Image 1: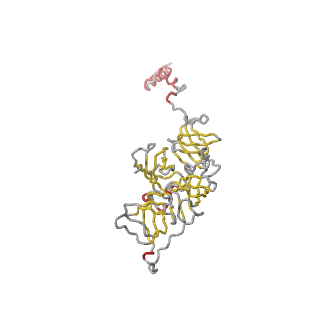
Image 2: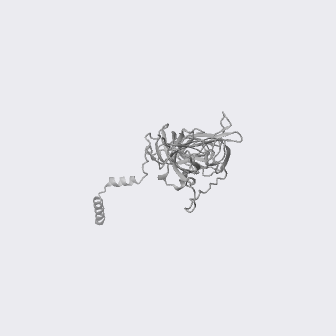
Image 3: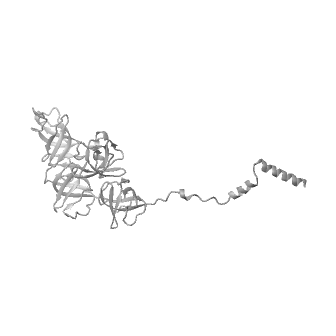
Length: 386
């Protein structure tokens, strides 16, 4: 009995030393039951993500039209990133990755996140050739009329061009491009919509074979001074059919050069701001009472800079127009000569003062060599238009 009493006293002391009591023990046993249910009111709603694949039909700068299984979907892509290798080319197979759930063709209930190349592409874009007579030529467009009588105005910003025999209205040229024409205009089936194709090259010969520049004569070769080839460095200001407007280095007055019968090569396009070399013989002088002129010179050729040999600091090609729309990483403008041009803005310096608002006029410095295969150009700098 004494032993039992001693054991009970020790057991009581142990509880006292550990600070435990009967209530603590009960609570501990109860706490081993099921945990309380979480407060579901604080949980985030489930986000549904999906994608839709189809063929690109149109792109307006912030809206994308896709055709999938004979249905037409129009997505607001103003907050999406465009990540297609070839750009926004009509007929290309693309996928729109979106957040939310589609109801039939109603896209108002979803948020587009990305536009990417279709992973399971059935048909890669192939290079195609058009042959026709030139109706018009500007820095960003060329209009040609095929033998069938159908006419199309193609976007040619930064496009390689070589005219072995010069360029003028009525000349026949070959135009290589990627993409497919959308449905013909209902108002005029003889006019094709080429606004979202990618033009790779233009020339009056096919394939393009540009001759090597003439070697510099050695001192031993006796050539009359007036027949020695010289170069005039100048900046392109504009081009309208066969008239190239230039600003020669060191001059504050532009000159016009007729390209009708002069071999001309623009490897990076005829963008305003880009440099060219005018090869000539004769003596370049300023008029007694006027600016520099090209009168009395024999113009042998016009050759633009090769953008592939230039770094970003020395690129000066520009495109100017009014903003049609923007996405998370692009801006699309309508140029003053009628082209629709989209530029990637990820790494561009934005010095404009309008915040890239719709309708604002901007000038974009772009790198032609960075967009040889894509119709989304790489912007280097964005400024307000002059």
